[in-house]
Length: 76
Image (cartoon, rainbow, N blue to C red; front, side):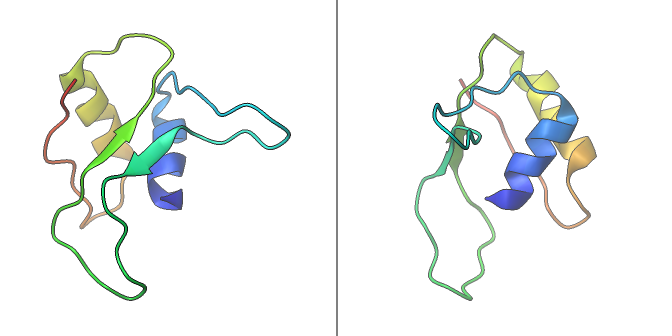
């Protein structure tokens, strides 16, 4: 979660943040993995303040992620 949030911030995406004393990115993963478990594919959702094309989100995010982490698809 932290890796994705940092990559989205570095990518310059117009992220919607939570309200409160310590705002954080509105990001959620579909199913949480057990501690120490690995996965080949995860699904998640983010909330943006404004519209960004899906191909642009994928490109910007992929540029900020380390080798071995790949964005397979972005859907509305």
